[in-house]
Length: 91
Image (cartoon, rainbow, N blue to C red; front, side):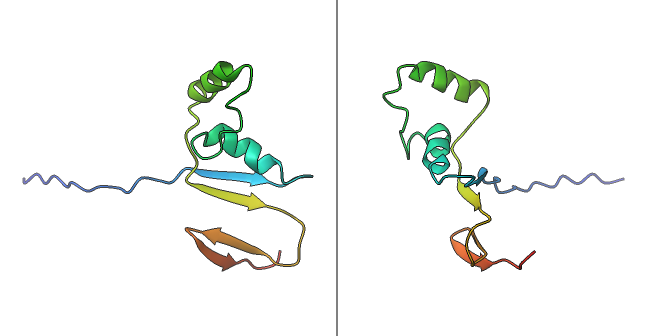
């Protein structure tokens, strides 16, 4: 009986942030301020910034590599994946 060891690397999965616009577009900078403070440091001057940082750390929230926005408004349905727009089929 022969033993084989296979070594391979799996590319890291991107952290994908999925959100909806809901009633306002303002959710996007708020959520990015939480997940990606190096990109959007929205909470830098918040009086309880240490609590926000602790919550982020305790919940294991890391920076998002991609942001997927979902909205029910508009005529055009599309999605951007890895920087390339993809048309979506109507539901």
